[in-house]
Length: 532
Image 1 (cartoon, one colour):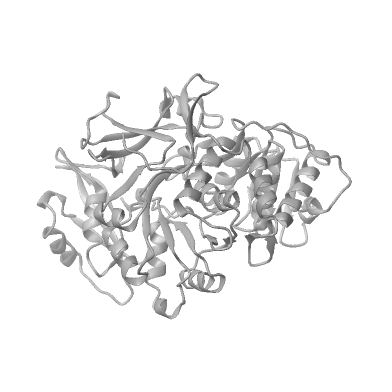
Image 2 (spheres, rainbow, N blue to C red):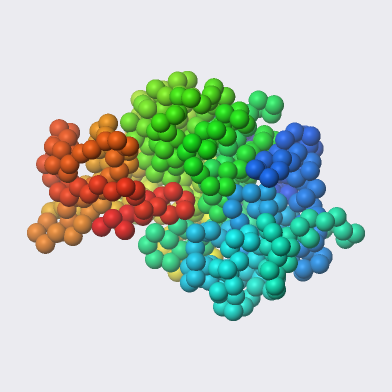
């Protein structure tokens, strides 16, 4: 199997479970060590940046030290304790996450769009003993406070703390505590990231220090950051593994500044890129689509950009070509990853590669093994499609508090992704569909991504999602739900006729629905279940 080239030395180790896996030899063994390394090398350089403050890495580490000391000595947070974070993309999240990692506690980033039962489930399922939240979420928490009984303390950021809560700035104060001395191993857990939950209840993916650090090193290698030249933009929610590992921990590992955007708005993001002289960013393809289609796009100075990475859903040929046209010389590199493998596991590395292998997510990173299997688990030869399985130090060992889901998903160290894929003779991986999203029309398998890619060729279409809907004769029929670009008009019949130019008749959508927007979860992924 072909893998990406690496400038890091790769070695094979034996895990506590008895499996062998590949790791980077010269790696930090904890997030605390990662931050210490950065401070020692680049302490005076800019670190995390938000709309409210700019911190050097030395200042950031000092804040982390104060908060970890207060949590440990004053509030009794110990190794293995879970602390829920209901925070947006801001400095309080970054400081809290690294402070918890330093004392071996486990962060539970909560989806800030959740309410009521969804919120209660994640807090209670994780067994969180503390909650750090923004003031704007107080009413939501107050409504369910009696149901989250394990939570002993609630800290509030962004204003005067309401009754029965504490002010987060109190944790930042320099106190005369003894230093925190907790032994944290790289196999220890650092975060529980709940899966998107587009179907059923979310599952808590238990990420280790080793997995997050490996992911961060992959991204740093892909972007090729240089201190003094580069600056990363983080537009992805930090409760999502891409935002946390790829767009936050990775630039901190490399010692480059990371600019945090609380809420994505296309025009505002372009303004930040211009003002901050951003050089790199990673996001779902939709975010890039929306940015490229801002009417005033050409009025922004985006000359600082040099590399973009896309993942979370397929990058269409039209998106790649549009990016090449609008941002000449700035490659948009499609990749692939998932929460259970701590973000990026595959990526393309050059624009030529992305354009010559349209639809491919590239090759595995050096420390990930991948294979495609049939329904019986037998590995398939190149070019044949089946389920994609992954193995390596980024793969979770278990779902939190869910042994059944763990047994079903991780077998002999291999993660069953639930994605249909094929791997070419050259070693390039193509994600064809989610197993559950593949459409079976009268015995013919139709990959939704194939139909979506054709529809993206239509110059009137901004976004599209293809799903299967029940049919009494054929079992399922193809349905396309799309969003038109501003000012464009089209009829369902026109869209169907367009598809007939490129697709076999049975793949042409029987139903075409035009909407103002597609339903998405906070990670930016389309919720296809709501389109059927």
